[in-house]
Length: 187
Image (cartoon, rainbow, N blue to C red; front, top):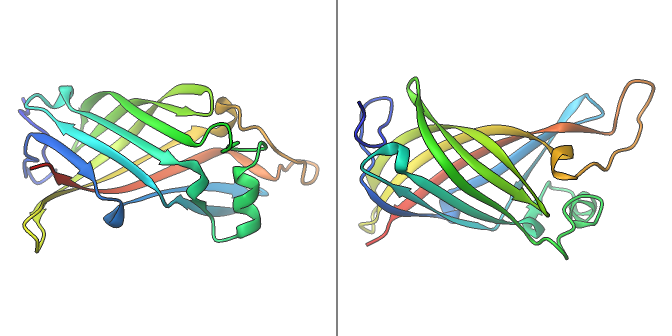
């Protein structure tokens, strides 16, 4: 039985509290437009912690994402995403993730949690890959993780859409999430 979080190669992530380093991390998403192509975006401002426990199933993660920091590379689209049609950032400025469990899955892990967008909280599972640990040039102990998952935006009450032909809609319901996280061990 595994005694702590490990990479597929067996590198152990030390027990402790790790702070997400936003300068070396990203939270990105994709959604289909007209059912044809993917529109990509990211959130530029976020924070969070990872708590690695001796027993990996007792490990935890939390994150807070500033929804107004959405960036799709198009100012008009970003303004629309901040509006009441989508995130309603004036009333609901943050998206919040709080883990509820971690379980091994092959060479990786599954991070289970609750994701809150607006006034709706739903369970979500993220496939988690642990990349390893290293010290940066300043003596900080760092760990790297990737996480992927998907959600239904309509399940969170984000149901703006417009018909775009006989069998198409403007914006797909499935949102794919990709997280690249580097975290620093607290001293």
